[in-house]
Structure formats: C-alpha cells, structure tokens
Length: 206
Image (cartoon, rainbow, N blue to C red; front, side, top):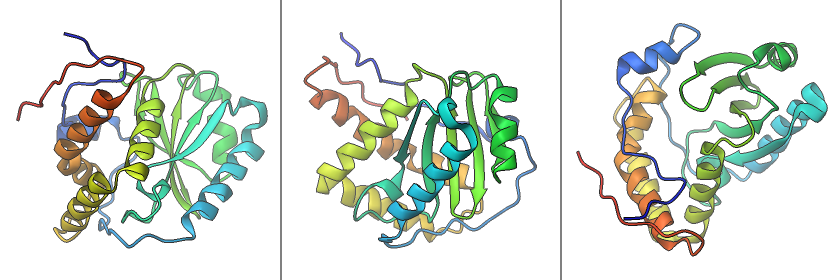
C-alpha cells in the first residue's frame, strides 16, 4: 500500500477543537455563497501587495487559494491566501507588522503545522500563515488547480456549497466541516491521478 505524501486522514474537527483554536470569541455571521465575481483576482492582488508592503523579504511565498481562486466557482466572498514566512510560530517576527497593516489574528493552531490565520476586513480576506515545508499550502494549490481543470468536480463542489449556503450556517468552520466528505473524495482523485507519486485508494470512513 502506497500513500501520497500530501494525503491526510478524513477528519472533521470537533466544535471543542474549533473553539480551542480561536484567539477571539466567535461572533456569529451568516455564511453566504455567491456567484463567481470577476473582481476576486484584483482583490487578491490588493491583499498580496499589503502583505509584501508590511513584511518585505519575510514573505517567502504567497498564493491565492480557496474557491475565489478558481475561475467560475461559487464561493463565500472571502479571499483565501496562503502566506509562507520564515517561522510562523515566531509571531513576534511577523504579526506586529501585519497588525499595523490592518490584519487581525483570529486562529492559532500549533499542532497543525504551526498554522495561524489573520483576517483583513477590506478586502475581506483570510490569510493562512505557514512555515517553509508545510504541506497544507501544497494541498490547497493542488485542490485549486484540480477544480480549475475538472469541470465535473467543480460543478459538484459548487452545488454542495450553494446547498450549504441555504442552510443558515453562522459559523464558517462548521460550514467547512459539512464540505469535508466531498473535499476528501476530491483529494483522493487528485492523488490517484498524480503521475509523480503512487497512491493506494483510501476511501473515507464515516
């Protein structure tokens, strides 16, 4: 049995785990899924410029990820960005400058590749902060590229997102949990199709 290096077990975070990762008290906010907006790439560029202006050479990599990075895909109107800095765990080395630029720390997850999440209100963006070598940015990029190139999975993902958007979620993390099964299944197809790595199918267990 062979396993793709980016494979992760199917795991839906518990509400307790979600609460523990939050730096600030959660304020309920309706989860809204909207039609693709041609302004999203420009919004990402604005976020990227602000990150580079704030951190300079400490920005090792930055990329547009999430549903707003996939042409033609319905999404929450929130720009998702992966930012790599020299050491995401050393918040003193990058967070003060991002806070001065308008970003607010919302999530801290030391056990998940030292992930941090900072939010910007305008453009509305979630910036995921990682260290070099983190696997999750590579997973995000693979997922983005696959959906961009595979209309069937893009349509299935859009249908699910639109359906969930009508269910009245007020917590984006619980909305993400509800997408988890399909996301895992799509990753399985990504890994199976990767010519660079062998992968034995690992169907999720409910």
